[in-house]
Every structure is written in structure tokens, then in C-alpha cells.
Image (cartoon, rainbow, N blue to C red; front, top):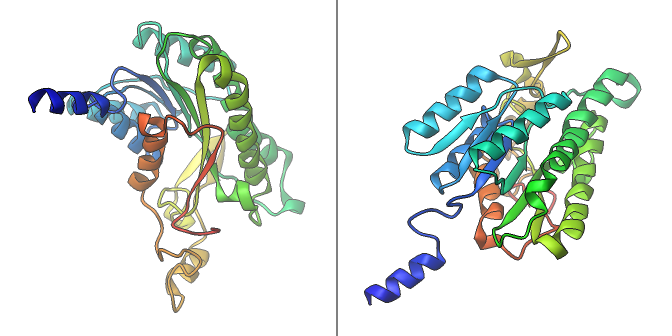
Length: 289
């Protein structure tokens, strides 16, 4: 019986964890969904590289992981800078003793405007952050994914229902997030046959983060010295909670939590999803189903 239990445990990768020995770069991992991904990945044995523009919050995330017995490092910086992407991959590979197994392209924010009022800066910044930066990171990390060492490799690109269905006032974001779907599918077709790399997209619906909190709460990010307010106008959020049926457009009648969102990312990254590639998984509580 003991031998049988040991055999089953090895199949489940227990107790080392579902991601034992794997090195994961997670962008935008200082808070919200990214920070939860970092925590859950570390709990499952991954060595986590926390990438974020906010150095203090990134280090705080790393400190919590390491204090709980996990392994993580912080590599803060701006994904819109090519030199930073090179540094991120270099330090991740050093941390992983020459290996990188997972990339989660999660970093991003919204900078909304209706079509006829959207500036070139709004358009170009959001396209660059959500579309070009993930491509450049994947390209830089290519030597660590185009390998045949028998170890799993997978890339998870974070999208949104705005990318799948469009959303008024978010043309830039919708365009970028729609492109992410094609990015994942192309990686799966190019790097799957020879190297076994899996690539998938996860499209989130309404998840409780600073991007869906009341804009009046004051959260913001700076773009070239300009403050960009984050969140949804309180009036718009109040309409959802004040309806006869709150969140009527979501069959589960509530937003998702950052932990629920991150759990979906973990599930796709794990061996439990070893035959899933080139897919877009909607995590929406049933919205747009």
C-alpha cells in the first residue's frame, strides 16, 4: 500500500507542488491578480520572478513569498523599455540556473476614452503595453523555450472580455487584448511541434482589482509624468450593485476575486492542463457565455 501511495503521489507531483522546480516570470506581479499568481505559483513549488514597475510593492510581494517558505526574486522595471526586458530575462535565467519554464504576461492597465476623443498617446501606450511588450518578452526568452530537455514550457497571456467582445470606451484595450489571442495561438503552432511549448490565453471578466474599483478611490499610474486614473466611475459601478438583481449580466451574480482569477492561471500552467494549448479560456462567472 505504501508503494502505491508513493506512486500516486509522484503522478500528482505531491508534496513538492504542481510546479516544483519550474521558473516562472510573472509580469505585473506586485499587486492584484499578478501578486496572487506569484503567491499560488510559489506555493506549488515554482521559483517566481516578480516583474513590476512598482519596486516597493514588488519587493513586498517577494518578501511575503520568501517568509512563507517560497522562492522568489523581484526584478522591477518598465516593460516598455527594451533594456529592462533583457535584464528581466537575464536575471530570471540566472535565478533558474539557466532555465525559464513559464511566462505569465499579466502586466497592464486601462486608459479609456471614446473613439473620437482617444489620443495617440492613449492608443500607443496601451497597444505597446498589452501587445508589443508581451511579444518582446517572449522573443527575448525564446532561447529558454525553444529547447528539448523534456521539461514543460508554457506561456500564458492575459486577455479580457473586452478583447473577445469589444467594449465601448476601450478601443485601445480591446484591440490589444484581441491581439493577445492571436499571439498565443501562433506561439502554440510555432513552438509546440518541435519543443512542446504550450501557449494559452485567459480572458477575465469582472475581477475585483484596482482596475474595476471606483475610479474616485484615487488609484492612478503615471505615464511620462501624466497621471492616469484607474478604475470605473462610481456611478457606473453603483448601477451594477444597485440593480434589482446585482450584477445581472453575470450569471454568478458577483465579480470574481483576484485569487479566483489567479487560480485559473495556475490551473492552465500546471500539469493538469498538459494537453491544453492554443486556447482562450474565459474566466467570467458565466458572463458572455
